[in-house]
Length: 491
Image (cartoon, rainbow, N blue to C red; front, top):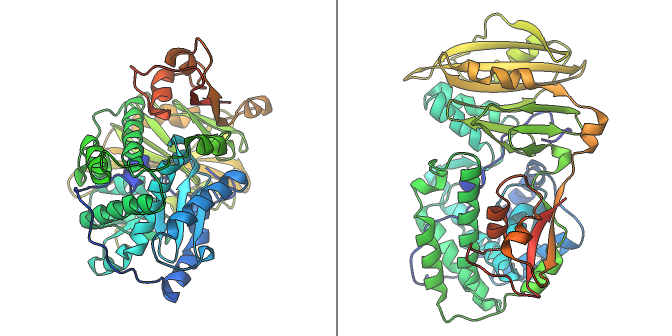
């Protein structure tokens, strides 16, 4: 969560946002003529680009960003969209979410977290090629008439309003708080368009000289990473958002391999890739706060809190999403003028802004939490099929700075969040200094190294072996050879 932004939005979860997790069918699509990017596309892309970059933690710079940019532009030149590499913009985002996406006008984005998951340059090229295909085939323009608009950000807001507030006017308005100040909307692609983009992505890999089987291997890593995250969050039975409209991951991987061909050949540039990504940040950027299990710590803001047992967090550039079986919420902030009552009422008003239905928080209670002035209010709301409790619990950190939780639970269940509200606390300078970023380190295996011994060096307190295996596309039966390069995550 960024300190500089006063309007926060929920981060996209990997399983909900990653457009690579898509349906597929065997065989190559028929080659079609590619229409060059229009001046209108370029103008629209240029207008949205700065907002998207800010939304996802900012653009990374340095040698790693230059390397990613070069691969991205190489793949763009396979599309026929333009004759010059300078007409494309490739951005490496400072985000801990596994994600890649593109917008019309020649703009493509990939997060450092997704790059760290990959194991060779061909996988990187495959992901970027898939995204370029959405632009080359003008998928967004073709979806305009469908009027299917899906927020690039604000996935939790959709969950909160759709599941707990319902799909009525109140539920739709509920998304406003979780995407306040953002007009960054993109079109949701159809199943056939996603299939087409995947087909062209594999074709671009082949024409660029890469092994097209890399699309299959990167999809397997993504599926394994999503499964691991679901287990770590205690949500192994939770169906990912893409699962309702997309085939099972194993089928997805097998189809991509069949499309590429078992006998396909081409370069992967594994050693070059590993050398270039060595040292890239992994996980949360401390400048945006860090999630460690049930604890969130923000060293710059000098604050920390804990979520209840059974709940998990997803830290975004501008907010922290909180979810569990009994309710969901968000930790965020807003403009503050020194009056907590007004601040809370503004948060409730924003939830239903633009709609006739309003949420009246009633009386606002005052309290103190670990020495921090605080106030809160809960409103009972009918979502059309049941009653839910909406709570805003706010804290004054200074006369010009306030933060708050907004939570939604089934009627009578708002108390599940009480321990979280009471856990908010200031942290000392020493505690803040102890928060360190993790980074990817490429090591060469020595004699005696095993999967288990290398996994023990991972900078995590849980699931070290599972994390190591997924990171390196290995299985529990894999063996390590002397001289083999593997990735570790260390402080």
